[in-house]
Amino acid sequence: MDPPALFLLGMFLYYISNRLGWRREITVTVGAFISLILFMGGSTLLYLDIVDWPLPPTEGPVWMFHTNYTGIAKADFPLSIAVFMLLLYPSWQIAGFLVARRMDTGSFLLPLVSYDQVKSRRVKPETQFVVKRGGSPRKLTREAVEALGGIGRFVEEGARVLIKPNICGGNPQIHGSFTRIEVVDKLVDMIRGVNAEPIVVDSDMIWTKFKPVADAQGWKEWAQKKGVTLKNLRQTRRARFDFGEGSAIGVVPVSLELVEADVIISVPAMKTHLLTDVTLGMKNMYGTFPEENKAKYHRFGIENVIYEVNRAFTPHLTIIDGTIGGEAYGPLSCRPLDFKTIIASNDVVAADSVACILMGYDPFVVEHIKKAHERDLGKADVTFDPSSLDEAHEKDGNWERPDPEVTKFYEGLVEVFLQLPGMQNVFDIAADFVLFGMATLPILRDLTPALESVMDDVLGGLIRSGYRSVKLADEGLNRIREILRIET
Image 1: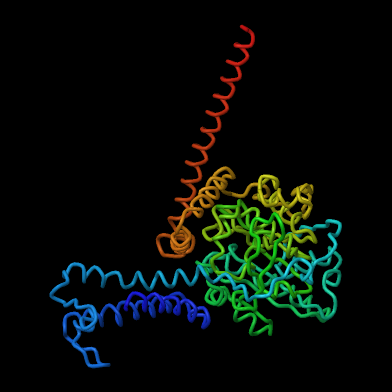
Image 2: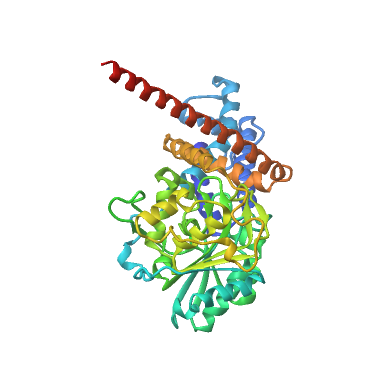
């Protein structure tokens, strides 16, 4: 009876911990108490006949083996197997927890919606962008929006405006890995200035939960003082969204907050990413999926998913916060860079492309930006000369960043890994430690960037050596073909 009971309790623990917004430490403590103290400890006492089962009064070993029904007595059962079964108790509970998390993708009972129901959809405007540098984040935000025509160009009176900063995708210990509050604060003021309603949102991830991270970064305190609605999309009403025929992801749950918003504004941090090269305006919208298990979308091809969520819920305005950027090896182990820059655009693809140029990337090397351009979501072929800025920065076009070939290798490895049976749960546990644990735990957080740098250099060298070998082999084969044709 204990294994199925532990399995069900593991599922219940998952749902109750999310319902009540427990921190990870509380969830682990409660789970350990249930499996180790109540079940493993209690069953051990029963097995050793130290205590009896109370209802109905039954000797401990008789209850454990249900001797009256099975005919199996303690003396008939090897001690080693009994110990082994008791040691397995925590695994039954963990299995229930993981199954519940895997199943938490919505229900067929949820309403089905598609592009026609998205209130924020609009005709694609002529692309405009602006880059501002120098001054406070609030000043730069105001100047950038005004240069695009003012907030009234994007937000009408009475509109419900969904603002998506990067909160859960950041490390509270590293500035530049999450959006600065000052940028959103000024944006909220401007939206309220046209009598519209701002709502600031993000969504749980496996390794960073909304509530503790928002608290640690200062968002909770700011929202209370500002009187702003701050929502975890994972705890909002959901619908099943049909991404259409030929979609990589098909029909998956989305938050109705996203569907019902009149205006969507993406406000990402400007930083690098080990799997997607950069994480900017487009990647920021990927964070709106209401499931904490967002890593599963990698098996569909993360670049396709990023494009599709932006196609469905295209931001009206993108404000990339590069006041403090995150260079080197993001998303959670990046290095803060005092870049003093804000990029704003009515075209999320153009905004990301300009950011890429400032970081030192060719926008067309970033696969989701390239896809979005080719499929006419926005313009990636914008031109921008960093030297045109009034204030130059030594890092213009020269950020430390992952090798694009290595990021493709990592992402390809993840996609293949997730296709294997049962590997999703293994990946979730590993990613929880590798992405968040190694970026935040003492000692490990300092070693991780150095380790990532070494891996980037080694893998980059190996991949390029492989390319050269293939190229030489191909050239050799072509030469042999030519010789054979000549002789013939």
